[in-house]
Amino acid sequence: MSQYNQDIDSIATLKAEAGSPWDAINPESAARMRAQNKFKTGLDIAKYTAGIMRRDMAEFDKDKTKYTQSLGCWHGFVGQQKLISIKKHFGSTERKYLYLSGWMVAALRSEFGPLPDQSMHEKTSVASLVKELYTFLRQADARELGGLFRELDAAREAGDAAKEAEVQSAIDNHETHVVPIVADIDAGFGNAEATYLMAKQMIEAGACCLQIENQVADEKQCGHQDGKVTVPHADFHNKLRALRYAFLELGVDDGVIVARTDSEGAGLTKEIAVVKEPGDQGDVYNSYLDVEEIDVSEMAEGDVCFNRDGKLVRPKRLPSGLYQFRSGTGHERCVFDCIEAINAGADLLWIETAVPTVHEIKGMMDEVRKVHPDAKLVYNNSPSFNWTLNFRQQAYDSWVEAGKDVSAYDRSNLMSAEYDDSELSAEADARVKTFQADTSREANVFHHLITLPTYHTTALSVDNLAKEYFGEAGMLGYVAGVQRKEIRQGIACVKHQNMSGSDIGDDHKEYYAGENALKAGGAKNTSNQFS
Figure 1 (cartoon, rainbow, N blue to C red):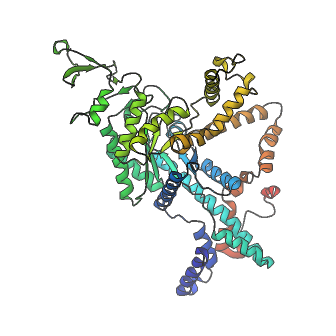
Figure 2 (cartoon, one colour; figure 1 turned 120 degrees about the horizontal axis):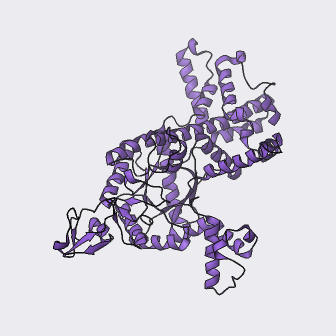
Figure 3 (cartoon, helix red, strand yellow; figure 1 turned 90 degrees about the horizontal axis):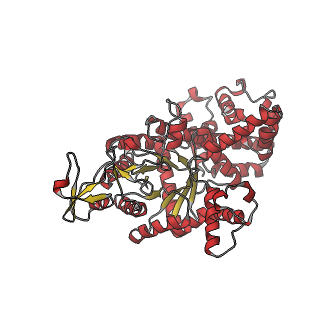
């Protein structure tokens, strides 16, 4: 017996026990409401989605074509529409997640207004967005199931047993829109205790996967900007453990931790690491510092110096008080960060790179996997990269290396539209198209995400609409550029009243008041024009 029918029977039993006060309660209506609210709490969601991620990780270990993907979302509606579109086009949400970007929370969700990606926004806004995303995804379930329930009623009224059985099967096998969210907790917004408290709030909202970076919390920068300052491994690992404790306390035993290293582009540190014995984490961290050997007599007032291999060395200190690493050590530091993060309990790794190149990502992961063969990567397919220019230059360079004639191209101007239909452009686009599959196969990238896609698509579509609507096209700018396309492409939002829950509300009114219900979806509802 399906869960739906079990619920009908159990509620019918409750109704019988309650007696006449429950006479107006319809067990099937109550069962429908239960089905439309599968997840009762955020912790239910976190436990469910953590299981999905763990199964996906195990499947990826067996088959590198089964990588996962997500798009960043800055509002619950955006996340909802992504999942509705996925189900419409692909029939399943399998291996499709959502990404919660700290950049977008800072830029779009802070009460201060737009902020840079420097952990200046309110801590609680991150957990609030997790909760909001899942509220909208749960509403997508309710809306879809509501439509199926209406189809079921229609089939029964028509006496169409075959259709009734078909719809009943769709209800019993309904796939939820609720999917894992990879949630950005920045650098933890403070010390390890602050990280733990914030993690708890995010997990309670539904997050099963938390991504944390190895930057100094109060100096945090966007991963694709300059001025990044990393912390010694011991400090970072304290926060990794804080995340694990938060998951365990709340019973999400298979919660997923993504350890992000910004060392490839981070040339600064705020601290000289503590060394307890030669060759330990602190010793290796300090070995990357840019230092000069000095004599005791050369020490100036306030100098910070330490012993390295029996010699007194002074790290180069900037006017800001920060210390700098030796140039060219970024890749080596990334590899060390990744190895040590897994040793400290991270489940997945994230390496921020300056450009998207398969060989660079593979090179670092090959080194990591010598120590941890199953190490898996989350990779940011960032809008901060100029993908067109980068991949045209990569194609150009490969042609030069192969001795192919490139005289028709100006490498410094390859972004130009004049090359859009060229052979070089076609090769570059082919490389972009297979980039995710290539890096998953070659560098063990389990999850690919784009941090800010909906930010950019919104800006692009609004620019096009504004140009047309306020220009010569007038109202046709909206009708031809938006609504007609919505109708032709079957975009559910063309019925915006339905998307806001109006039909769900009508169903409930009928449950509560029967034939006395005053419903919004009658003959005079203009949304009927889109039926």
